Length: 257
View 1 (cartoon, helix red, strand yellow):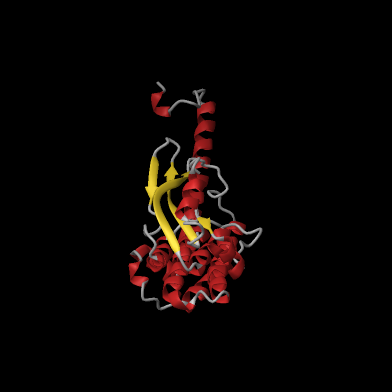
View 2 (cartoon, helix red, strand yellow):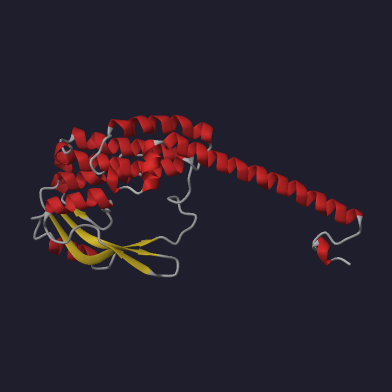
């Protein structure tokens, strides 16, 4: 956060007039390059900003929320769950009655850590993502925030699922299959969706046939393993032959006289 971020946010809240005050945010890569993102529609048009965040995934980074709004709607993060922000973030904005989006960049998000927890993939993390995506819709419905933006919320669920399917393709097929079948059934419940055509062909294919996608990824992974296995055997044979012939095993056979 910028050193004066809270001062700026409080000032923009107009003595608590707004339920939400949202700044812009910035990614910073390992080389220090800054990429500024528009978080929401600048101004105080709540409806426009809510629709924008549902389509573009508005972040909670550096956002000021009114405490009474959180308590009124009982909006809290699920514990012990990875990607917990997917489960509840949109509900904060759906619950708001007023919003002020400012142009100041107040939050800097460092993305240069290759081994950070957000970049490693495991079965449990992928499962958590699917659970948090389910909770996204469940929380909106329980808190009476779903009906007004049902199509947009459903589309957001599908959008979360595009990446979930990609992650499922990164874990072993036997583990991924049950989760994929479950996710496919959830996706089918939300189809058709009037915004489906916004997706690129690859994303559409994933959503329509997620099981086929993870099968292809698994076949490709197995081919690479087999190729690496035979490459290792070939390398071992070459080394053995070189040793028998009294050749240096570290040099190419073509460089020997």
